[in-house]
Length: 124
Image 1 (cartoon, rainbow, N blue to C red):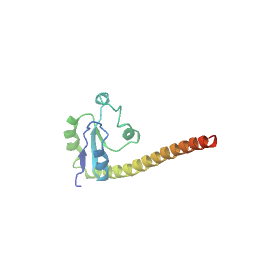
Image 2 (image 1 turned 45 degrees about the vertical axis):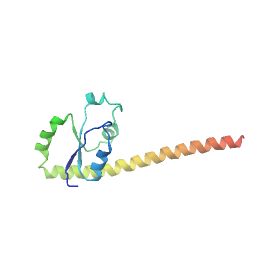
Image 3 (image 1 turned 135 degrees about the vertical axis):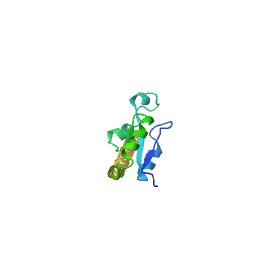
Image 4 (image 1 turned 90 degrees about the horizontal axis):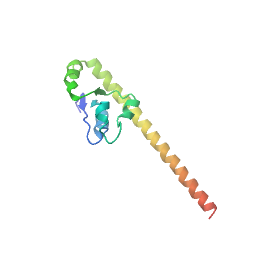
């Protein structure tokens, strides 16, 4: 993929697969986030994992800011290279932590279920 920046507009759920695809492709995601706009979403603050993990995305308050951002940064190769590097590093770390967290949940649920079954069988 040759795109330096990728627009990631929200759909039904603002946190969507296109954000992850953008990171995998080595592009810099551009997203719109506004506390006011997120109030109308079914999922309250679906960007929280990105915000909490300091995702190095380009965050705009609305799409009207896009032109100004591109005018200021599109020709700044140092900014672009550093931002792409940050996105790649963030993505690897974020997905690793997500996978470990998911495995932990599965492991603990498995232990809970097997302990329940053992207790049932012990007194059956």
